Image 1: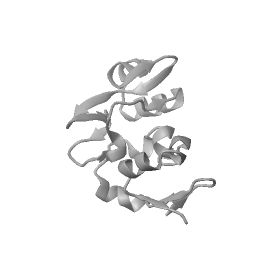
Image 2: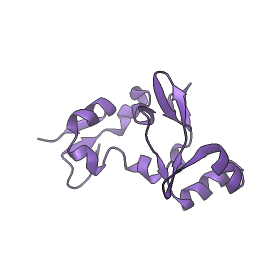
Image 3: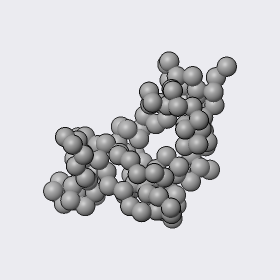
Length: 124
């Protein structure tokens, strides 16, 4: 069980094995990624940075986000393994993914978080 200070819930990371990737799929959104993460992933995939960005990144204002692909009745992160239903770059996933479900937004949107993550346990 993972706890984060100032959050009214805990997260059981073992639930991920049963989930099927709800946090990686669904409505369209942005998975922001920084330059250091881009460099790590391009090295891991043995692509030069330009190739990696053309294939996997979209520009959103002044920031970069991982692309999405159509999946079921919505979208999935480009690195979501649709067969195994998990993250294919788990160890190198962006900080935004690593900090899920402990996002400030979810402190105030309890119902949405419960739909998104089966590993949430509210503390009394």
